[in-house]
Amino acid sequence: MVLGVGGLLMLISIVWFIVLSFQLGGSTGEKVIWAIVNFLFQPIAGIIFFFVKKAGLVPMILGIIGVVFYGYGMFTSLGDVLPR
Image (cartoon, rainbow, N blue to C red):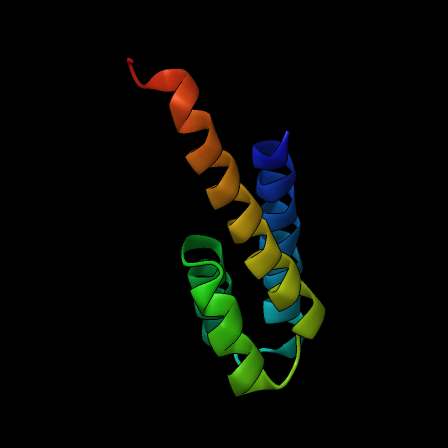
């Protein structure tokens, strides 16, 4: 359950940052680069985007919370997968 919520929050954050990349980018190349970087390297790219562009606080926080939830879900589900 926690794993799915974390994945959903990360997906929302990624899509939000891609939209922001195309809205706030200067040239077409800059827009595409920000979109690709935000797609591949969340939440680190979201944090960098926030400090460089001064926009995207809410999706950055969503991405960080999503990664924490996803990591917690992966850690707690290891007991179900590993042999005893």
